[in-house]
Picture 1: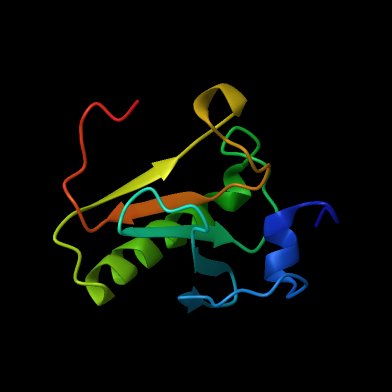
Picture 2 (picture 1 turned 120 degrees about the horizontal axis):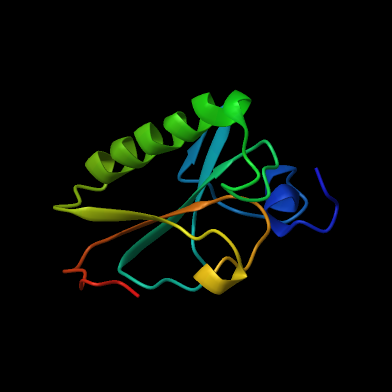
Length: 113
């Protein structure tokens, strides 16, 4: 885990957080700059810089992230939700640790970009 990675530091407990979900491979935390009434980051505990950097061995945890998002959306009684992944700076990725944004709690516009 890179020492400068903010998400790695949260996972290691160096930066306090209040997870809304936590298991052996995935953690979910509320975004500090929410873009919707519900905005949760769903993050693998393994450091993977981006989807482009993921390999076949990461397929299981990437699938688990989607199931965690499904569980959280049900727990939070979201009528609908969006699961967003930004890959690369040009797409809006600002942290080099793969993370998915679970957004909901209001009508979401389309197209998103």
